[in-house]
Amino acid sequence: MKKVGFTIGKFAPLHKGHQYLIETAIKEMDEFYIIVYETNIIDIPVERRADWIRKLYPSVNILIAKDPPKQYGLDEKNAKIQIDYLKNILGNIYVTHFFSSEEYGKIVAKNFNVVNRIVDYKREFVPISATKIRNNIDKYSKYLSNIVIEDIKGTNK
Image (cartoon, rainbow, N blue to C red; front, side, top):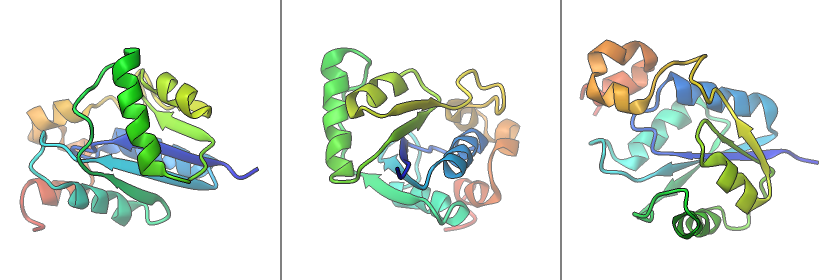
């Protein structure tokens, strides 16, 4: 059976932790989809953030999540809103695995009836978060590819 995985994220910014997850998925899956969410927490449009991934991983399939729901949370009501949104984005794409490093992975996998593939949950292989990077880009730039650094610092516009 063909293994088709997916993940979701803002990739704001795309960092080595995201890349570790993506590279793990590429090795394990026959096909991989990345849903890139629109967000206002970074001043780089969703299309440009998706381009970072396309440039680094041309074999993956990118889906853009425009106007995502504002409701977040692991409770049943908010999770249903997010799951319905994701199902709409994926449409008729048949998936078998969900990749994440987050607690919500269990909820997504259960609702899609797929394997929940957790990658580096404790951040032992790549000890970084996008929040840390946004708060101090210079200190944590070693966790970013050159493509991302150039965009964030405004030299690749």
